[in-house]
Image 1: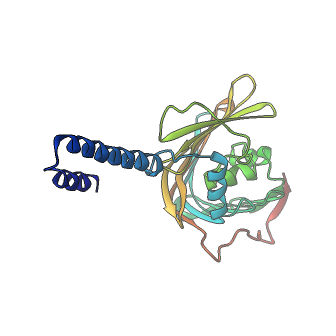
Image 2: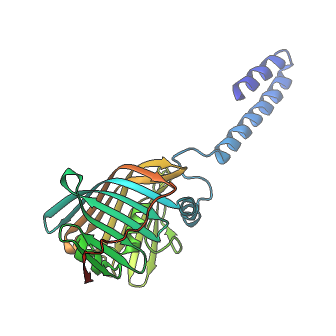
Image 3: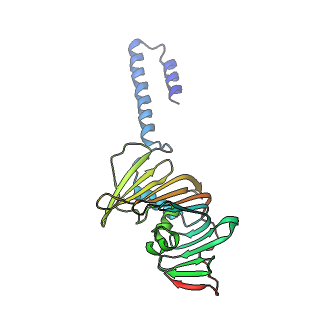
Length: 274
């Protein structure tokens, strides 16, 4: 459009006196520069930081769109060099209800986990035993090997940082496609990296007052489902106990209806308290 305007203006004032030509040229250049300035300040380029970006607003908007989540793929837990792998199918309603089915070789179910923020059922199919108790990091570590609470697992499956979205302060930007934010609460410091290309956080790190890493989560391989950007892969590192927890999804779908988020343990199963 600018080039067309420039050509038309040149033809229009071609036979004007020299002074008129100079004035006309200045006028055209002013219009061209004005158009260029306007387009660069208002246009939003995908993958680049939009004007007036606010982390809390972006994360809240995404969270409100993400009501339900279903994922299936591979699950890996490694503690002190000992690695266990399995497949899983998981369903999550908001952050309230989680149903996780873990299968081993030949797609045989070996465990089922049904948890809410207040209570957890962990069914060990191999021993026909149900372990029941609070969904605390200690209890999940006892059964899954990693110190994650129900809320931690729900947030990581959703591609979110535990603890809500408020209280983060932006660090000086070093890239126009990523931003770093830091939050200090209680005795820990939390740091997130937000990718404008993925339209979500790609890293969450929590350190103690001595600067030691307590947990570091990385999200990658994002896909879009029902207009929500979700990671297919998550890697969680616990340096202090030399443990890792990773999820690699083959399929992730958002806001499917008629999903199940809980299960009834077999009546004949043994009961144990966590």
